[in-house]
Image 1 (tube, rainbow, N blue to C red):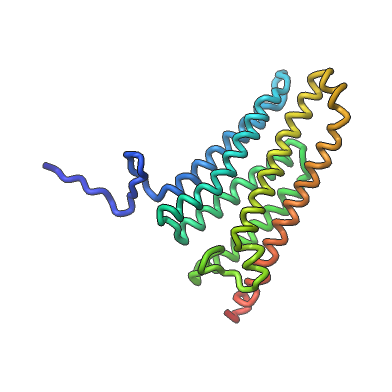
Image 2 (image 1 turned 90 degrees about the vertical axis):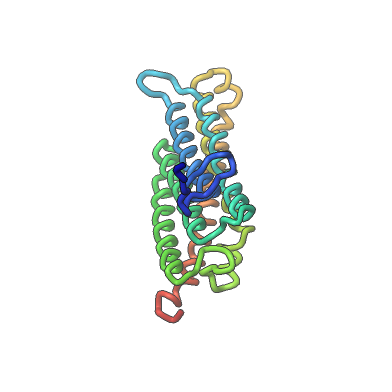
Amino acid sequence: MAIITIPPKVAHCGFGWYCYGNMANLITAARVALLFIAVGFIYLSLPHEGQPAEPVWALVAALLTLIVFIGDAIDGLVARARGEANALGAVIDIAGDRIVENVYWVVMAHIGLLSVWFPLVMLVRSFLVDALRALALREGLTAFGERTMMRSRLGIWLAASRFHRGLYASAKVVTFMWLILELAFAMQVARDPQWAASYGPALPVVQTLGVVLAVFTLLYSLARGAVVVWDSAPALRGEA
């Protein structure tokens, strides 16, 4: 009788099937897949080929966006609960976060809800910070956790603490959901005269709050990125 040997790198996922990697990484992959489904619904809601706008699809996109960001919290909890937390998992998690946030910034600018400067600034920030983290990883250091690359108290508190990681994730989900709901609201006002008469005057306020949230999230991200650069300076000068 033939004996089938499961390769060492194949980990049981707990649901009667097998997969490469671990459950936390699968959740991250699912988040990224769901992200693009949400983006598809955003564009499906827009008027195209003579078809009117459909605000309901923007509402679906907002719900999926919430699930995408909830998944960010779940994958970390799952990794710690299953003992799967490691440097590779941290890198994959950060990569997933970068894909999610940068895609949303680009889409929000592309459909006209934000200036193109928002995604441009965020992309530069992402490339710079992640390049520094890649250098730190070569020295056995990670972005977060016991082997964090952060050196200063401010850096550990602002960039590596669970409090600020959670707060920044909350800022992103609130900002992106607000902008998507703003899109749905604007389309409904444009297509329904009764909505326009009753709620149209509130649209500029809603749009202004969307920009305020985006600016806050952008500045928060830049502040967190700045402490990563600051704490990486000694290593870049060869003093580490």
